[in-house]
Amino acid sequence: MAPKNHTDHFYEILKNVAPELHPFINDHYSTWNLMFSVRETFSIELYQVALEQIEQELNVHFVQEEQLLLPILESYLISNQVGPSAKLIDEHRSINKKFVEVKQLFENFQKVQDNNENKIALTKQMNLLAYLVMKHIEKEDHYLYPMLSLIFTKEEKEKISLLLQINRSPI
Ligand SMILES: [Fe+2]
Ligand SMILES: [Fe+2]
Image (tube, rainbow, N blue to C red; front, side, top):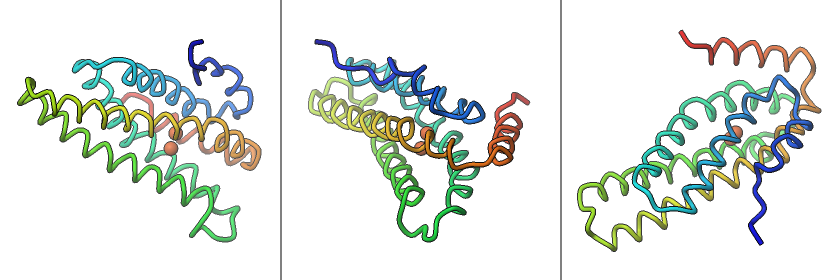
């Protein structure tokens, strides 16, 4: 039996998330599918695309979650030393750290492609990075975004939507 694909539930996931937050879920969809392919196939071209996509996510999507969403979530909590915001930021940092390691491995591998040991090491670490990204996305799709959709006020959601439109529109 084929494994259950997280993105098969994309339209169901969207139903639980406020429309103003959908751009984040759309990002998740494309990134999750790419990470799924990475774990299925060893391909230098695919790894290159996947690393570029993760870098883009780190620089845009993760930053927007941390700057636009988490401060509002934190304003509803008593302590932010622990809890959903602190743990999500921890995950962002772990993914960033693993990304830097894997990018280095990838660049080294391109210099000495015939080394089978390097290929095994790269595949293992790339699969782990893809796994971390997929689990992070699944958690956000099923827990974070549905909860934010319920907690945030209409005004807060509208402000996020406006800032997303400004930040994401081509210059
Ligand atoms: Fe995130
Ligand atoms: Fe996310």
